[in-house]
Length: 278
Image (cartoon, rainbow, N blue to C red; front, side):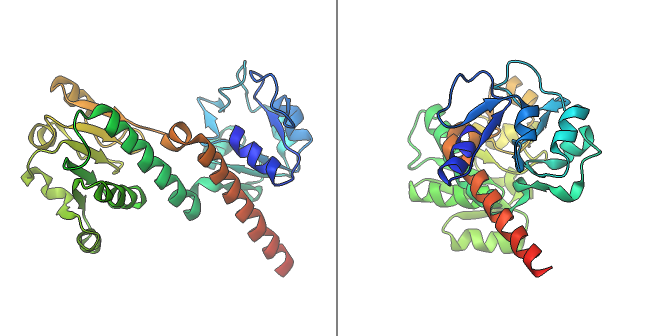
């Protein structure tokens, strides 16, 4: 979010930080309380996810930031851009839902985050795997945005790439992209892999499948919680598993912040065009 603020500042906007009081100074960025920041702003940008444990997601603030009546009043009537907006509605039902925009569901946001996620996942694999990516037997489970980017990057590094999917159309696209395609429901028929990346957000890698294709593998789960891997079973089998969440912000915070800023800029431009047509 700090890089997002700096990106808006570089575009010539006046930016005020609220909920960052652990920071002493950030140049031209004014640091104040969330309430004061909301009061002096024309639009408000909240993080992804915007809330955490019943309060605003503000880990760089010394104290918890609760969305009380005062903060809700300060935000009311202003455009609010956030990630996973329904969490915000749960804590602030009085907010005008028409003025709350979720940048995390935008396609351009998802595509750019897929690149950051894939690079972060590859960094983990290169750190944890004792061999080279080149020549390694690698499985990518799922052929969504992240799976597509991973397939391309791994193939360029000369890995032996297998990609699993359920749709026949996806299986054909996997073949066209030069990887081996396999139906996700037939993974148990595959030989063991060196590295497994999971992008599917429901249980795929249970104890039976892990014991067959992943018993000597590094398993990197990129799916949102609870993920698609039986971590308890993997622990019993001494399989190295990593649940790699929120990789864009961890692996490439500058790019992640700029992606949020660019997405919000697009949304503001589109909203402005719609108002002109109305």
